[in-house]
Amino acid sequence: MIQIGLHHFGENVNKFEEELAHYVGIQNAAALSSGTAAIHMAFKALDLKKGDIVFCSSLTFSATANPIIYQNATPVFIDSERESWNMDPKALEKAFEKYPNPKAVIVVYLYGTPAKIDEIKEVCDRHNVPLIEDAAESLGATYKNKQTGTFGKYGIYSFNGNKIITTSGGGMLVSKDAEKIAKVRFWATQSREKERHYEHKEIGYNYRMSNIVAGIGRGQLKVLDKRIEQKTNIYNKYKEAFEDINEIEMQPMLKDSKPNHWLSVITLKEDSKVKPIDIMLALEKENIESRPVWKPMHMQPVFQQYDYIQIAERSVSEDLFERGVCLPSDTKMTQEEQERIITIIKNLFK
Image (cartoon, rainbow, N blue to C red; front, side):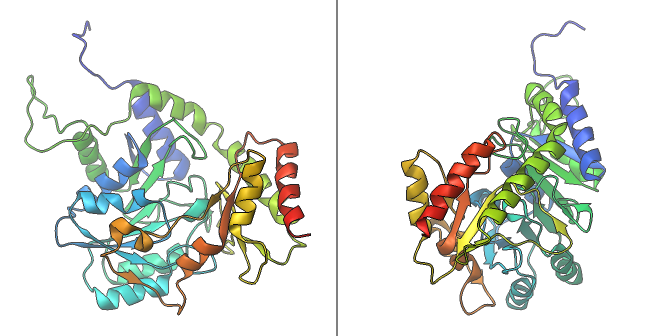
């Protein structure tokens, strides 16, 4: 067919959706322009609107919370627990006591580490509230041999430039609900009706993934398991190297979980003479990038009017932000480069 030059989606988009859905073990996927777009579409699919409340992990990147505001809804931020640094099921339970009818819960798998998802899902199911999993950082990570992103009503993945596999920019929404995923694809292509002319009965979005980007994604998916192996090796090398330094602790993981170790993150004990900034500056001096742990959402100026629920006397997420450092974790990093990073950090403790 000779076309007049209008946009048509190619085979790569469909195939990437199929291949990713198969990899994580779920039936349906919609390839979108970003993980943020995927979260936005999940909220739209739940008909989130003004006056609705969403319980959201506080220790995360702002992209998790921003789409709540896109829908004019209200976030309530939930503190972390110490065993995985993810949403605390007990704090979630406390949130339900205060706000009995939220529209949704969105849980984040921080730095690729699975949360106490069984307990979180049990709380959501008991209250009959849908669960969205922000698995942007945790593609390929499993809990009890089940892929993150496949426990709740919707799961989202990101293929941003810094993720474990990347399409430079892109995301995916997954669900067991075929009808809703089809609807998301429709919204994401400007809500164009099946007419000869351009017909629109609903507001649409320019959120569909392009065919070129999807082609890159298909190629990247083939190396995902290898990347997870490389990231795990990086994490283990740091863990081993710092074992004899009492002040350093690696991000912990739950017994039944297998993180993808997207980032290797440490915390320094409170009484440590070396502070996170000392490590960051020492590495920076050698032109090596490291970062603080995410600044929790409830501490962000833009979200300061929203409620925050914690169980512990001291906020866990605030504590982790103050004591944490994200170390270089790129799979392109050589053994020698990692050794150099380790040496720089170790020298601070001498």
